[in-house]
Image (cartoon, rainbow, N blue to C red; front, side, top):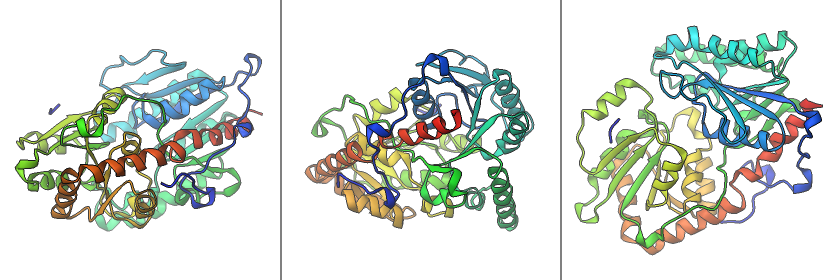
Length: 401
């Protein structure tokens, strides 16, 4: 692979805290409930699936198993981690193989666990969820993105068919959701598509824990992007922008995350840009270390329908690391950036505007450091997993009873 505001109101849909007394009591050993978290797309150590949901449930006394494709084509990831059992299936080499084989591997492995509650994270697993319901299991569907809108941006679907396929997929999704016991939505906008009586919004905020951060002034001129690498997440605009930054500023771009496609990975490997380093997939520890020595974080997703109302976790990761962010100027994102003062808004399709924002933050370290401090305070008070995990535990307590 190549190398604030302190408070938020619940009704605003961007945070809100839960009083500790509202958190369900941990289960006693006599009440131990077995839970399986299922995914056919994400890895076994996915930030939302493993580090948030699974570890939170294990800490509350549930027996938790994650069933997911291995990080490589081999099955070398099976081992208990932080109170969570991991069961991997072979990762598919192609999308067709994933739909024809991986989802059924996930189903059979999950079924073998004979759990009380099954929680799946991908829309392609809806048929699996329905099969588990037929077996009398309690099932939760975790909706990470707005599926009909997401389909409108899929490059592997012919453009003239995307709208019809999106509408059909949305109907199938809602029909399946009506039969499940609980729906978890990653944003309030997603939650509005599902029955309110069984839907809970659990936003994808980062865990907030003490971490080692180098003093901002001691960090080099490193600009970072973390997350999946794809065209519509702005990879080409990032690289074009960093090449426009004057050499005297010494700016370097570090990109950490898995590639969206093999074709894109090969394309970037064939391009030599001295001040760009594409690191590929990195562990959570490695990402934290990278952020701890960076000066600027990039969130430059394109203005596609599925992104306009999303809550990009990478923005909150940058805030937690006390670094200012350069962010796509979308209305919902503008609200967060302007209220917290954590960064700079730009047109994500304009490399010149992105380069100008990078120059501004590198040339004005006091301003940049202050943005990072404000972002950190907002993350500590509102945009963190502590504000969300009790809603997850309350949902499970209801289903467990």
